[in-house]
Length: 389
Figure 1 (cartoon, rainbow, N blue to C red):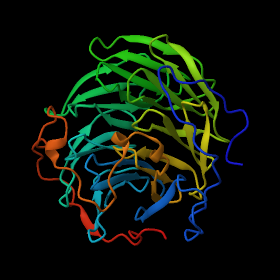
Figure 2 (tube, helix red, strand yellow):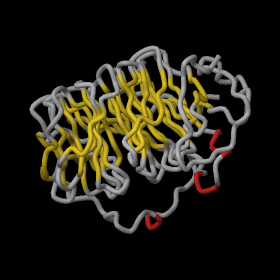
Figure 3 (cartoon, rainbow, N blue to C red):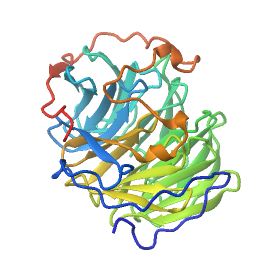
């Protein structure tokens, strides 16, 4: 049964969705030739191998040309979706990479590491980078703002810090957490910031005044991840208490609660439509939640070890997962056929829209980066770029 007992929730305010047909268990990658039971079931599209240790994080480029992953082996891997193109390994961090994120412009990649630094990489074969001594303890997360002008980072030093991308300089800190801070994100409009920590709280901040506007105390254990909904009127978090919680920012009330997984929730990601939430857990599973119906939609058994990261593509037609089994997997969503046409996307090998189609406020070129101090990125072939079929 793909539906977990005890999952509960309420209909998101102002949202309407069609009820989908009954769902069925997904075939595992060990039997990729087995046809999907329903045409709307997620299906494994690609499997990437290249990291020499577990994979911690994953992020799509806005143009859908590339996928970036960070590994406990200290490397950043950039995977190209066109079959004839090689993958690139970026070397520079001196310890495990805990988080990666593509800039909205698609020209920069940010990474955070246990070596207490963040790096800004040019998203090309040269792999030029700038290293910034960001924190006094391991960096746990990095995330760009929606306009690509800022970066927020979190650390075991209990701080949340904001950085200017054009100047590559520190802006300010958000102080208030009393234990290691695990995750943070900007709201879609950039006016608010959300953070989660091992002090069992989720905090909402005013990005300009740096004041904490509200603290959510609903979790009973460390809170490892948090996210804003695409509309910005709802926030979600995942915790070591194995639950996922959603709050309405208009009322600051708990909106939905899910007894989500059999172990710690490592990562959550909203579908661009705002109708679904994806979660990755130490119980080795990925779960997809129908937020409109307030129920578990799919359980995905794809990885053989702790699932550490997950992300939707910009259009929501694909999602990527990363795990301690050293694999990065890309799945075709398929259930997005239930959604309006504006949420449909491109095939992986299709040519993306021109960069001019991106929001006009995004900078057309990345900041000028000096030559790297470490050896440049080496090019290597992926051993499993072909679709798993």
